[in-house]
Length: 338
Image 1 (cartoon, rainbow, N blue to C red):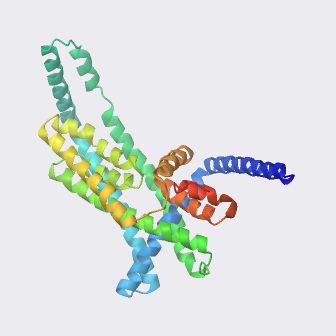
Image 2 (cartoon, one colour):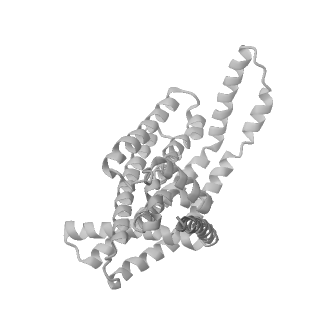
Image 3 (tube, rainbow, N blue to C red):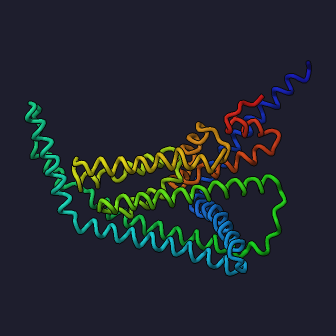
């Protein structure tokens, strides 16, 4: 009985030290995010490229260096194609900016006339004046600048990946079971997510191009990227094209058809196809997924949202291998510790 106070004191000390350590680590992540974000992204992309290299070697019997070089070339070519298509789509959209502004004013004026017919008075001239000066097209121009900034950051990521890939020959094989499990889970998760995102982006591009929607390739790119963000990513991907659809079609049937097709694509791939191939995935409870999304978004912004699930899943695997932190890993998986 005399050991009980010491036991509770030890427990309380461990909890307090864990909270302090978590705070210090979080502060470190925030302070070093300019370097840590490209580093972490490059590590995860390295796992994908390593799988691509392995596939090329096993499928086509390529030499290791040939498979590695081909994987890097494919990655860089994909990135360059995405940037070129994005800038071309923005340029094409800006050329028709006056026409879209007129369509917007005409649609809103029609709605205001219908409201006035039912006795609802609205200052039509004030709203039309505001719509005429709407800075939406400046936002699109700023989007081009942000894409250019993203390209600069991706250059650093590519350099990190090259160092990882070409330095892997001198690295001894991994024998630690926790690290092997972590890399295997992250590799499967990212590979499935990448394929699902590519299919999503391709289908979104096809739908938008069939209906001649402006910025179609930009929205397809966003659909590809946002698919990596759990839960809210697919919703955001559907909502993003709405302003352009409204500018182009108003409230005509095309507007609702395109919106319905985009929603169907996101629902089928996100809720039916992905879970079938991921299985248990990273073994995280949905509440833990949302919590990790919020936490990593606060710490690293948008890149943290993309990386939240693989980072949290990797941390959970490490925690599950340590006796004192195993209850935390079980809690993240949705299993209450005994």
